Length: 173
Image (cartoon, rainbow, N blue to C red; front, side):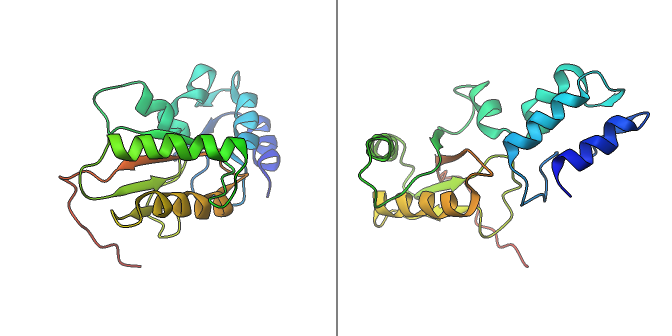
């Protein structure tokens, strides 16, 4: 099933309801394609409709909702994909400089975390913790792994310091 198949079915129905985030567990769907399809529900009876289809909480556009409350959330750097740690392209060099500045400015002493938007960060493949050793290269490599795994389905990832007050937890799979 493709996003168009789902939305064809939804717009032919009398009413629609999303009970979860639209991209949840749809690992083969491109977020941009999905958001284009959501526009078809703008005037359709149900939830979401109207401007609700762009709600960053509903879409799980984490950078968008984090940037709405500056100073309250963890410092966050948005990194556009694709990214290659070994590339010397102008865009990748610019990203590397931003990353270097970010990790030197925001360091709680526990490393950093690279995570994608539009996802529940429980998946072991998607949430990448980078320790203090190999600072930049560890972060670059984590971003590159997510870029290979998530792009073009996802257009960006986020870099945040691992907060000092974060409690360690183990997820059982």
